Length: 132
Image: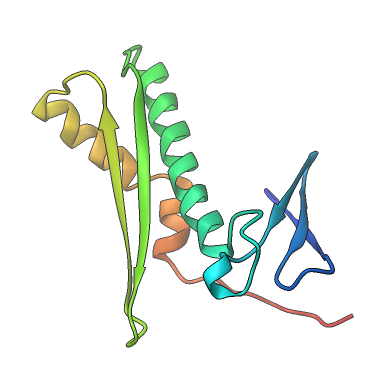
């Protein structure tokens, strides 16, 4: 297997706050104030929804480029839902500024179902943890 992404987080003095390094990028992670953090960066599930939204946007643009079509300006919104019974679901909305035909909507929904992050989220992963 090859590594396609990696991240390192160093704890900071404030509770829940950490400095994230991913590739050449650095940013903060934190929890919202209502959960005891300072809200200085995205929380873990924010990264999860951002990952899915970003992958969806990139995949749709790649599809459009491959098909030599212009999708125009669009946005991707992702919400992660959970409840006390630990039932979870993700809602994703792709919003186009220009009208999209029903035929194209069906094709784009199919593309969305096959984005790499979508496929990862829909299958189980093996997570191995080592304490050093």
